[in-house]
Image (cartoon, rainbow, N blue to C red; front, side, top):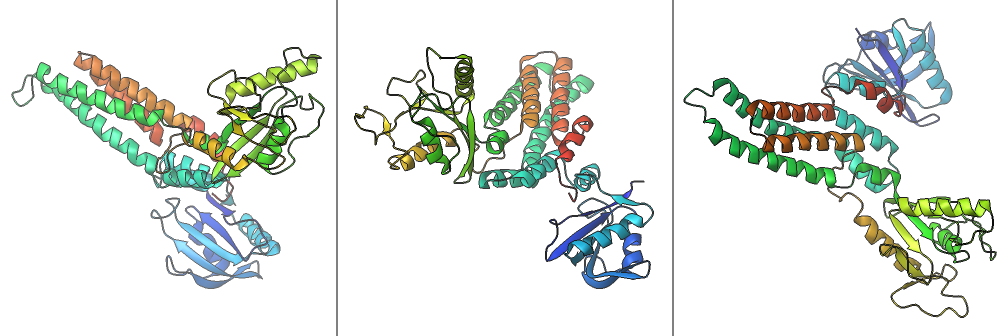
Length: 426
């Protein structure tokens, strides 16, 4: 039998209301010890909470009989006044009761997973929702937390099970009249496996949820004194980088996270590219600049010379400076006057849109993508084999991958890491 656990499930006090959640086999006994008579299930009732003859608070008490609860267990909530002293007193009283202990990070959600109230993809989506900082992150995480990925994987599973049933029937009852001959049955089965593999591969090829979480990496690159730091500050709308007329002021990468129109960006200023660095420090800075450019999603090239890569967004920077002639086919910008900054952000956003999941997509994370890719590979193998025994094994391999995506099997090792990033009250 699992322990009964408790935790503050609302924000840290002080607040108007503080919600303490209790889950486990003794949840209702615990509430009865503090509040006396239990209210009717799922109906808020005002109770005076007492412990050792001392009144703790007047609180709203709710009880939720399992298994139809968030955790799949008996669950109760105490809606307290949200002062620090009130919360501390109630938590101390709960901690003093036998058989009751504070919850660990993510333990409520972990119990929901263990009791079948949610699957692993929904738990991962909830974790992303708790960490969401942009509108795009919130939307994608909410779709995952509400079962969007689970629904997709269940569809893949049903189709693979149908193929598996057909091949098993061929193996077990191939000599019976109502089972199609092996040659007749294999061809449509192989085509169906190939079609499903292609559909899964299309989903796998879409940008992952990490793009939303980590942000679009935008690197500013060019020779020394090209105006990179000034432009970074203009794009970030704050003094993130030191600006100086002295060439080589920036010696290392400077990063500035920016949220714009619901999308996260990581702007990176780099050391000026110089074929003849003056010292070892500058040489290291240039090497790091090249590394940042290689890892970038978008590179802004601040030099009138042609960019080293056609994919770079070439700018005519420092347009306000004297003697700066206009370079053809360049976006003209001035961080000093603001000229072209709006147009530059529009171009960055247009390029970023091709790197991010679509607004209605349910993007996979790295773990889910790897397993879905393995399942697609198994289905491709099944479509190319002619031995029914080998086809059946490849289909079983695909089904095992689907089970691991949803947490039905083979995921215990990663649960501690997943739930460790949840707050205590989740």
